[in-house]
Image (cartoon, rainbow, N blue to C red; front, side):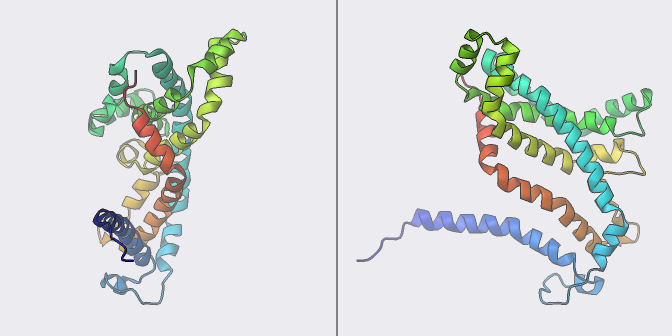
Length: 272
């Protein structure tokens, strides 16, 4: 019996392979570049060669790991504040329709503004409050785009929680906040975890605010990576090794939040 080939299935498989190669090949090229010598870097197509770890030694000497630690600290504080405030905001929007439909869309209005519009007010306030030598301005700048996204992300998860759970808790004598904290919040913990990872990734990858607001002698990771673009030219091998250090945590985290990420983004739409 001849098996019929579905052309749509073939086209979908080809599309998935093209997408996978589009994402994978640049990462593979960067990984190979990180263990090539300067002479070998002149041949982008070179695949078979003896690995050279000089680029990785250069990266460790340049303090990339310390910069990664500073980026992780900034991202962790940003995410902690965003999750606490964002979960309460998302709950209010979901359960009580706070602000109506406009709030669901307006909460992302800050994403429309280019960072250059916001960075100078942050810089002015940092100098006025004498915080220019700290990471506090960077954290507040990151909150301007991480907090709205996390709030939007969590709305869909709170929408999925049956209102009857909270009503039963209120009947049992819980206050409104106690019902939220002890009954509703545990139902969305997986979504909060995914939102935290997503927000961490957004903060981790930001370069613009870190370039202007972070202390000049203690830069965060994206700015430290950009420093390999020197007046002598781009140190391509060392930059590739540093990029691997920056990408691995993000790629690893993405595998754990794929399903929740789609659920959170689609769930932020208007539901009445």
